[in-house]
Image (tube, rainbow, N blue to C red; front, side, top):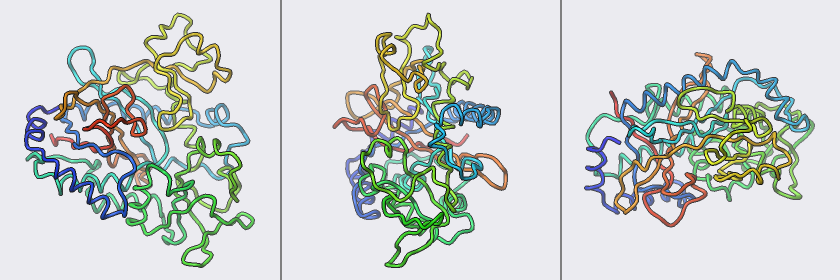
Length: 399
């Protein structure tokens, strides 16, 4: 994309720029990133950006036509439903593969969507670090924030969503064993930006409906939880000892409500229609004449690419007992579009991140997260020892 920009970047690239960026991560957060950082950002032209947001706007418009009460009852067992007030989803991530349309054009294709937070504070650091350390960054007018935000206003907007009117000491980022999570670099970035503590779910104290944690030796009330716990991971740990569950009746505000993780996810993809949305079918209700060679089998509620079958067969499908928890999604052709300084070019998956704008009463785009790969799966948990792949950020050309 933008060949002139890409060629100039690659020709003037030096390993020391990448080394300096990695050292900046270590100096800023006290450790190296647990997932691989790509050597390069991605550059996207205005035409492709328009296509991406054409799809995003259509998806969001369709979201509010969905009966989420029905989705909740259909896909969330009553034993897992949280009794807390639902409210609106505070976050939305929409993932697109950047694909070849068969006519030599690059188009976005929806891969999945999730009403769950991701690297909201690491990504602005990364964008700024690229501009700081890459002396070969092309001349021109680019942005990685959306909605006319900048470094300062972005933090203010996301702070407003997470803290609301609470004091930082009464808001926590909750994760399960945060020190072991691959995305922990974002936890430390969040703590630096907001002044809130990162607390393991196992360390929370429950007294009736009220929650507390220990801060500087003092039992401190929790009024608001910025939740980063993935229920899928929670359920896989045997004999886990916690004082709370995500579905407890608690005197606390969730950011975001745990049930949104289920309701805006792969489970609604068969309901969405757009030229940039591949066809999807629930596994318990798909056309009998479907060519399985053209589809991917995905569990509805897995995370980080777990359980995806790129080559499903009828025998595989027949062996699945809980077919209501899977979808078949039409395969897309990721384009090897990023020219690299190695033999193989890289493929790209682009995640557009949204937050809930209370004043405007709608979701608004704020920043992006980009992932690069040379293999079949684009996921920072499935990377090889190759280079010019991994987590990145996209710079969009101003029209």
